[in-house]
Image (cartoon, rainbow, N blue to C red; front, side, top):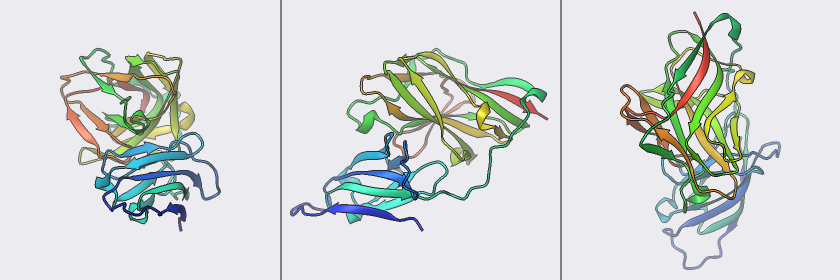
Length: 282
């Protein structure tokens, strides 16, 4: 059973149910280990953020969602839902504990030297439009937002060796993306197939192609998947982080999720430069 504890600050006479709600606290495991980059937000809305390196978080919920639920999600752990109706105005120390999820092992070792090496995904780096991650005035400058691309891997078994992404604008000394891999249902991202966090750190305002070695994670798939990048951390100084968008690009589908617990939106015939170095067997 998952337990959560809250220090409620309820001495707020005159505050109505339609007032905004401010929640501060931290997230740990049931063994009291800090959890960095937990996805936190009101499900199916744009209101969300992520916890920092020490598991701390700070989120303000608009009056429209003051009676909804705050959800906490982390790869390899069970979700926790906290009812915002327990709060009249503000919580200063909400302590959330996540319990490990009992999931089947989906990452399988495949010998990469006995197959055919391929590059799958978009390599187009020029486009008029851009994916914009940094949005001034948004909590955490839009931390928790996510973009994704479809990769067709269902015709054989594929070992995924490397992720490549092109960044056309970046003035942050430090940026960290979380890499997620989702199954697809009815054309939309469904379940995260990973059992542990995979992070892509980018330093010194790096732009251009950025590569992440995925061989240590032993990723192998024989189904179509959505591979996504979720923005989970940035340095204090900075204001721009974008990836180019190529359109029209027939047959491609681009996914975007604003808010860490938001709803995926699809954009047909467009793509952003994310590709995979894979080895196909069979």
